[in-house]
Image (cartoon, rainbow, N blue to C red; front, top):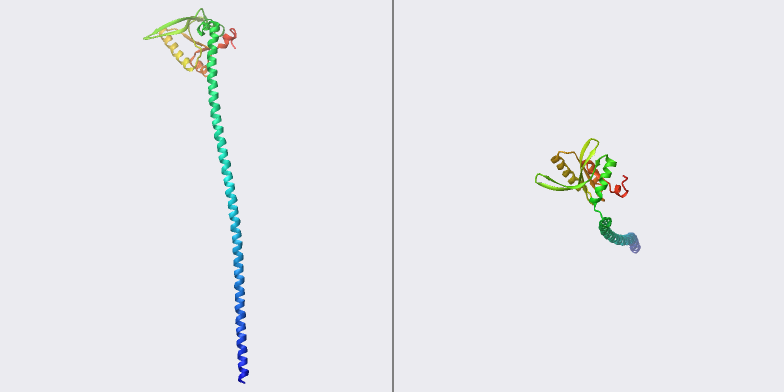
Length: 237
């Protein structure tokens, strides 16, 4: 009887031990699965990190290439600006040389003709005044004026007439007639008019007359006789 009870107790103990062993094995299996899942997740994260690192390296490479292209573009731009500045300097030099050549050419023309601008104006201006302005003037001569303490010369002056009106023609002949020349001659003509009490008709003549001088001359009442009139043989173009 006692032996039978002892065997039963041993059997129950073995069964309990087996149950606890199975439970422990189940826990270990569950822990193993969790560990494997964690390792899998870690591996995935590592792969994603590696991919991100690869993308970052590619972006860095693209950025370096863009920076290189930008530097190359800047170099080309600087070279273009340098070439443009050099071209501008060359253009300025050519324009200056052209101006010197033109001035020299005018001088040679006058020398070849044996006439100065004043000598040309002496017969061109009266002809122009008669045919284009209806003013008759016999001759134009150099005249000196004294106004107060000032003494100055007018290249060509002459007594003229338009209808019944007597006019004192004052003519300034210059190779270049610019705005400042027009303004200065206008003041000189005003001084002569005030000193003599006569009606003064100011005229300017020359081969070179910048376009900006024309509106100023019209504004001040100074007649600019065109050089083309002389070159065309006395026909106003």
